Amino acid sequence: QLRLVESGGGLVQAGESLRLSCEASRNIFRMYYMAWHRQVPGKERELLAGITNGMHADVADAVKGRFTISRDTAKNTVYLQMNSLKSEDTGIYYCSALTDRTSPRIWGQGTQVTVSS
Image (tube, rainbow, N blue to C red; front, side):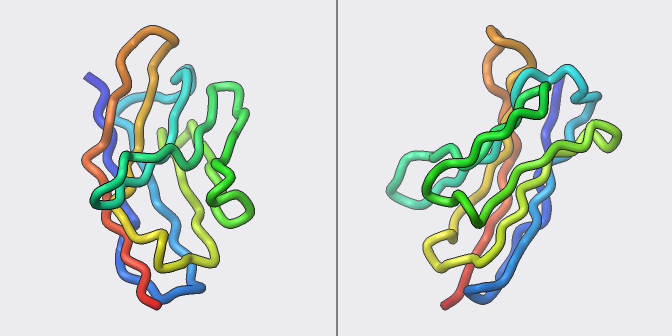
C-alpha cells in the first residue's frame, strides 16, 4: 500500500522560506496526481497545489506567486517550496496522492508549519 511521508515543517519568521517534502513508498512516475493541502483549526482542509504525472502544475490563487510545487520521480518525492511566508500560512500541511482517476485519495500524516510575525 502506498505511504506518503511529509517532512520539512517547522517554525520560521514571517518572510522566510521553507521547502516541504513528501516521499512516497513507491515509484511515482505514473502517479496520476499529487498535491499539497493545508489544514487550519476551525477551517476545512484546503488544496494549495497539485501536479499531474504529465508535470502539469496548478497553484491555488491564495498562494500563487509564493508557493511552487514540483515532482522528482527519481526520488519519489513531491516538494512544496514556500516563499515569503506569512503568519496566516501557519497550519498542518498534508501531502496526498491519487494513483489513478478512480482510486481513493491517499494522505500523509502531515507536517506542522508555524510562521511567527
